[in-house]
Image (cartoon, helix red, strand yellow):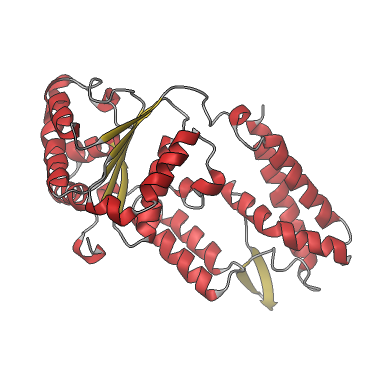
Length: 335
């Protein structure tokens, strides 16, 4: 679907506008060339429009995934030919316990689809229920239409704990059945994430019947059997202590003689990864630089100014503060 054909529902979007602007500003003030910046800006705006949670914007499956390896394999299989997945309406329900990487897999599929020009939407069953029960007439209309017509739809946390009663479930069933039926008839891909190994059996009444009939033969239920919770730092591929050590070493480099060619070379090589780490931990800050009497220009990336004769000292002090904050956050997670 052309993006212009789809009117987005504000009721289904939970991205804070200030957070979005902060990310966009960080890209604009970064060290990338103009073309790379434009690519990143377009991507971030599409992720925000698709309601993909901010914590997944900079993550890549190939580089950052720390969940069940079977999900990584399924991601690679599904995204190998997204046009084929779209044309055939390939739908998948990722079912399994907590911490296996289902949400990251789903959001990274949506990111890939967004990058390819498809419209996509990430939402949860609780958000859908909220819009259907408390939204205004226009909100409900736009939400139903977006859910039914977006190219790639992902519904996370698809389990019955958000249904207050069986009678309420029957009410939601009628609305969800309409969405599912429209998507199924139009062969539009739907992705789901659930903690239940059997999502159909976890529901009751009309909703169970509706979901069961629409899933049958039209949605691949990809069950990830319970195992390690990969969100537990003890099960991550890169231990927290290694991340702390990397930040400490960079801090030591900044404390040394940065004019030494060897030290300068190490700083330049390590800076991109350190900057990424600081941004992911939400401690990255830009510099305020005095450009005249009572005039301060904000928005300078301190990594750019490390070797500047005038601004270097200020940049190093700010970076050391950020590194201390980042190390403190990681040490807190390690307790």
